[in-house]
Amino acid sequence: ADLAKEGSVFIAAKGGAGGKGNASFKCSVNQTPKIAEIGADGERFSYTLELRTMADIGLIGFPNAGKSTLLQAISRARPKVAAYPFTTLNPHIGMVMYEDLSQIAVADLPGLVA
Image 1: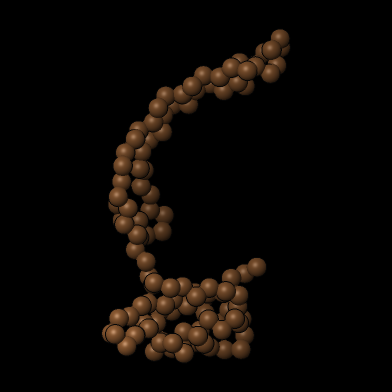
Image 2 (image 1 turned 120 degrees about the vertical axis):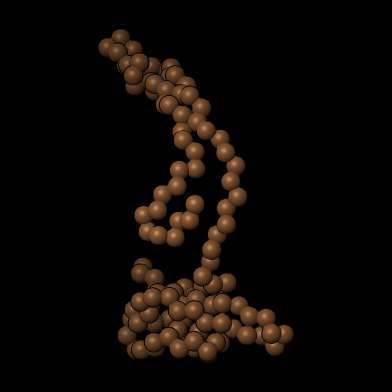
């Protein structure tokens, strides 16, 4: 199942029917029962998950910490840089090239709110 859209749902397995807890056995004589019924087993499946990532490395930190400036310095990405907090509203991706022609993707993520 592709869960790329917001609100997408996938039920991996259905749970079993719940048993009666000790509250259902409570009465005026036995106010703290020590018994309970076991519920039915749920479904069991095995899945192989594939996770899509937008970058190899994510730069996270507080606002005005220099994340966008660092991304500009190490890649050819040009995120907006300004002297006020929360300049980065959406993630920016920069590709960092190495001498052996390998590359990694670095994401500049919006600032954390403490």
